Length: 225
Length: 218
Figure 1 (tube, rainbow over the protein chains, first blue to last red):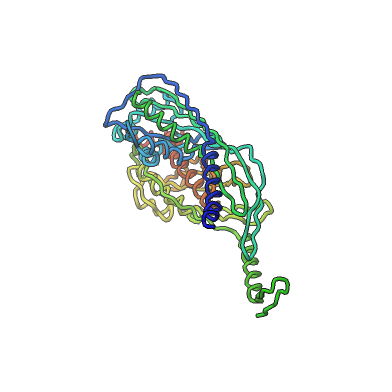
Figure 2 (figure 1 turned 90 degrees about the vertical axis):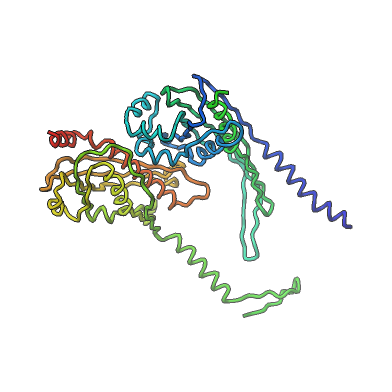
């Protein structure tokens, strides 16, 4: 009797774990690197990762920028990263969405301002990494109905959608005032939310995967590996 | 309280008139809460600009229209939806930006008060227009704020030295569990920072201001 009860309790749990394992792996990430110059960084130099916010219909989320920067500070070949908010506030008003340099030629002009050059020196900035991109949700399908009553509530049905995170990182060398490379990461994944009384979200972590792969690649790139 | 016997399953079912009344009251309260206007007071902090100071002394005058500036956003059915109060945050922004732009800055309660302070000019900004775009209306995943200003630089006699229009824009992406109020506040703060950046960097390039600065130096 006991073993029967144990099996019935375990089966749904095992099934759920298998489902989670299958769906969690439903994310594919592609990283491309285009190198235009030699790179390398000294121990007293640092990198700032900034988000592009010039597009009219989207902007690079600061959480993604923070994720990439934070990940670059960890592990082998860790790099000193200046937090985006701290850098932008210290440089105010030169790196606001409307005033930030769009090309290295603009950066060259910007560096002629003594207040900007001095602040860059203080931070020890060797590279500026510009992140541009967005995560889009598409191909939504299915339906989910929920009902609530004084005795409780329940949901039935299922939803599915595809997330596509597409980000590009452009690396500027502050020393040579030139673009030294571009790295792009494209992660896609299918998410599901089946509901049988309780909805179970099985979310594809596309943005987290894009962040991880992009950060690892950027770290190697900056270190000149 | 009434206790009824359910003959089908032989289980007592309790119906309480007070409970129904409470539920009805809750329902009405929830329904009414969706009809009121939401008050949004713009709050944020502004960094000090990292720029070279212009060697002039300026008095700053905020009129009541700027101090108490608020904008009402209406729903598509014409009902009051959001009342956005940004007068205080505008003053905080100018208070952070102007001392970094000019050698000496004082704040006055009237243009007349500036005469006794021996300043070179009086700066009196005016908010001309405020616009808000909500994701529910634009179908974009961003909150947007536009603000149009009339920047006025006056002599101590109240005549215009320069009078120019400046627009600022701010947007912020929608968050999955973010509130509308937080989205509006963030977009307004981005717009205010945009104002500060374009104002501080373009001030010396306004033709009338440039001529006035040249006349002070000569």
